[in-house]
Image (tube, rainbow, N blue to C red; front, side, top):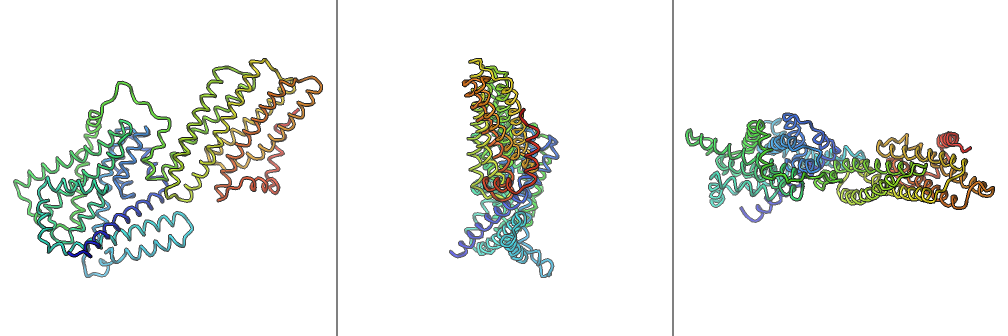
Length: 585
């Protein structure tokens, strides 16, 4: 094996790893976060947990990715530790699908149809189809399918390149000597664990072992201990992910480790004990890629079948390893914004939507409380609640803004890009509404402390104004949470009505001031309230227009509003209806 063979082997490994990653990313994008959402909504049925864990891992081609997601779910409090155990077991089964895909490279036959099954035959075709989809299709889903096909073609090309490059190793005595050493169960297991821990992918390390089988120098006696070690080494990713997480999240990572260690130890003790009695002759036979896939799958299926009834025992073992403190851990306010979810940005975007919806609900509660104070039900307790909500909403804006910027650095689908844009625009408007809630609370406090009262007509008009504000806030928040574009289109006509109400109230106040019905002092407070009402309506309009414009691939608020007010008959009809509903006096 010369220098250029080594280069070919390294290049093949690089293609294998990149192709595996590209295929997994394409599948994850195509799912749009739905696979992870299935896991999140999982019931406590252990059999279903195993099947879902296996299915999701088979699709995204990475047990490490699935396990890291599960650690994130447990850390976020949206999944219980006992639910995570079944998924982790299923992930180990699902990851064996990759070894079967890679085993196709070992197909040998003169039959035309069987030759078509060889990666060297169909991988180029899939690659060409993938390139066409990526370059010439505008639809996001088709582009994602193209990425999957290209990733698969690269993966299989890398596997073929590695297999071809290592074939000369069969004639190198030093190489066969090393492999003979690995036939020692302990050394082979340690080697497999170390290799997998370094590259952080059991699928890739199994692929490397399958490629080495092309030399004909890898016996089953050598391969089996290495495969056992690979199952232990893959736990490194989850253990690293669990660092700094909650106790239950670290326990989930330990469950992954304990499952693989116990399964490996039990298998090796029984297997080599039986071998000492009956001497398995196949251990001396040269392994092939399909044989590696069989061993890999058989071990993980057997380990899952044996240990699934003892899943509660694994959970208790993890709890004993990381015991509870005297005080139970409190769930963090922003537990869904977990950096572990960034590896699947489509899912992370969905979690952001949930957190922002919570922010929107808090904002509505804050402004509704301010309306109650303005309408004469002032209390220091409610005023303090509004201030506390404003501080919390500020924190939401900071946390969400930071997390959304992190997400935006990843490769996102068009739909997810739209969602991120909407969220980034919306969190600022929600935070500003809560600021105006505090301003209104301070105006209500001034009315209360100075015992200021509006005239009967002024109070009645302010009541109509408040009713219109409650309506527009409700419409804007529902529009944001539900994504209802039909409802969004009703917000701007109401905002225009509110602008007219504001102007009319101030004109009426000046008339009452001249006639002595109102005082200058009450006028100052009324002006503050009206200004804050008008600004709240503006931010509600921003929330709705953002939904409409970004979904249409544009975001020019002023141009949109100018066009819709000038040319949209439906806008005029709605405006007239709102003007009638909130008519003053």
